Amino acid sequence: MKNIKFTLFILFPILLLSCRNVEENKDHAGKLGSNEVFVTSNQFSSNQMQLGNLVEKSFPEVVKTTGEIDVPPESRVAINAFIGGYVKRIPLLIGDEVKIGQAVVTLENPEYIEIQQEYLEVAEQLTYLKADFDRQETLLKEKITSEKKFLQAESEFRKNLARYNGLKQKLRMLNINPTKVEEGSITSEVTIFSPINGRVTNLGISRGMFVSPTDRIMEIIDKEHMHLELIAFEKDILKIKEDQDITFRIPESSSESFNAKIYLVGTSIDRDSRTLKIHGHLPDSLVDQFSVGMFVEADVLTNKSTHFALPEEAVITQNEISYVLHLEEENKEGYIFRKQSVNVINTFEGFIGIANESEFTKKDRFLVKGGFRLID
Image (cartoon, rainbow, N blue to C red; front, top):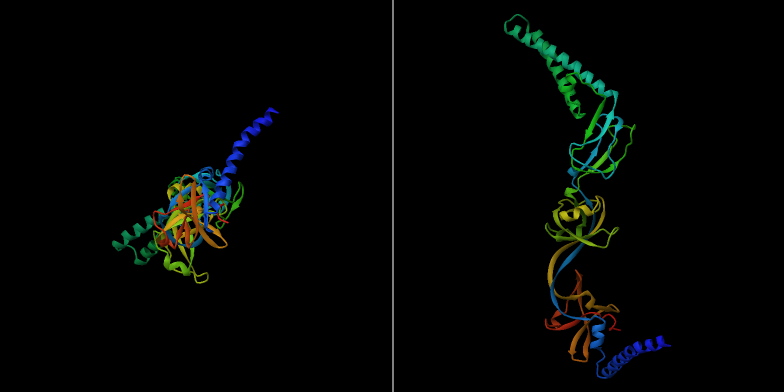
C-alpha cells in the first residue's frame, strides 16, 4: 500500500505538468495560423530542441565514381624462379613483413650444378684461348705467323669470352656468386631475395613442390605508395581536375567516409567503356587501414559554390516538399514557429543548401533540432 501511495505521489506532478502543457498548447491553438506551431518552454528543453541561423557553406558539384585501392607497379612484385626447382625452404606466411634483400624462398635443382660446371669449363678454356690469342698477336707483329692463324685465335677467344660472360650473368640472375664458383664452390641450391620492402600477399607453394619459371611463387606488396585508382565516365571528364578533393567509402566494410585528393588524371579514354582513370593520393595516416584491392565508392568534389544552409535535421521533407520551422516569436511561455517551404540544393557534410535564401535574413532563426515531430 505504501508503494502504491509513493508511486501516485511521483506520477501526480508529472501528469499535472503534462496536462498543463496540453492546456497551454490548446490555449495558443486558437491564436495560431494554419502554418504555425507553438512549443512550450518546457517542451523545448525536455526534447533538447535547438535554434540556429542560416550559415554560409561551400557546396561542390559531386561526380560519382568507383574504383579500388591500389599500389604503383613498382610497389607490387611477383616472385618467380629464373630457372625452375624444388622448394627446399619457405620461411614466410601470408601477411609476413619482408625487407629488401631478405631471403624469401630457397630452391634446389641438379640443373644449377650443371650451369656452374659449364661456367667453370668455359672459364678454364678462356684462360688458354686468351693466352693463345696474345701469343698469335705477338707473332703476327713479328711476322712469324700468318694473319689467318691470328684471326682464328681471335675468333675462338672472343666466342668463348661471350659464352663466359653469358654464363656469368646467368649465375648472377640465380643469385650464385661467379667468383665462388671459380674458386671451386658449387651448390645445388639457389635463394631468391625480396627486391622491395613490403608484406607477403599471395603464397602458392609448399615445401617439396616443383616450381617452373611461369609459376608465381608469391606476391609482395609495399603499401607505402597506396592510392585510389578510380574510373570516371566520359560525360564527367571536363569537370575533373588535379588537386580536387575526394571523399570515398569502403561499402563492404564500413559506412565511414575518408578524404583523398586527385593527383593525376588520365589522358586517354577507354574506347570500349568510354571511361577515364583517375589517380588519387591517400593521407599517410590512412594507409594502414586499407588493403590493396578493396572496392571503393568515391565522390569527386568539383565546381564549388557558396550558399546559405541549415543542418540536415532542420529541413523536414513531407510529400516531396521540404519545410523548415521559422521562429516568429519567443516569449516566457514558449516559441511560435511558422512552417515554411524551402527549395533545397544538395546536401554536403551534414548541411542542406537553401536555394530561396533571399526570403530570409542572417538574423532569422530556425528550429534546427527536434522539429521532425512538429510537422504533420
